[in-house]
Length: 186
Image (cartoon, rainbow, N blue to C red; front, side, top):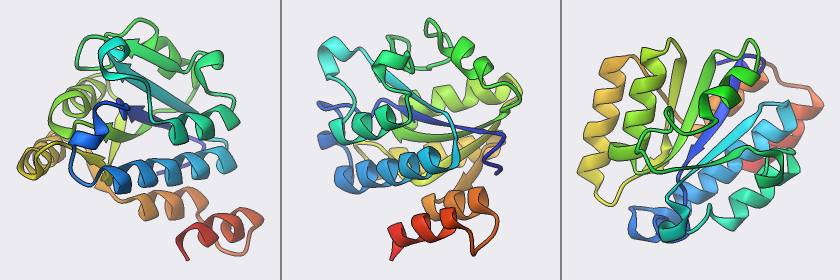
């Protein structure tokens, strides 16, 4: 993973959905951790919301951090959708393409076996290098999450953790960015 080639995609971490999922607080916290890393390292962040009229909006703590990056709803980087995959959503591919030269997509969100899975599969089909953050995705059932991760791995997604994303984006120790971001895991 390379911070100059990557975008962070947060899929459907919504008010009415995440409380029903496994480890919801940890998933939201891990998503926030990665948004903080993205903000500090200049990685663009894109957020999707599945049928927000029914499922509510993205968790407030995530939206607040995304807004600090200039990528909030006002910046147009929160995309509503009704298809399970984000790829056919109006404006999604344009936002991904806007990140010129950014062929890597780091994916987090929910539910792993539905919207995350379908989005990852379509991104891979479109030639993107996809990194699925295993400790920042969740489903209502753990077995759905486990089998979906296996399927995405089989399709070519690279399975990573939030810390591996941070350290690969940083590349070296001893920088101001390293000092600031490594404090997040202490």
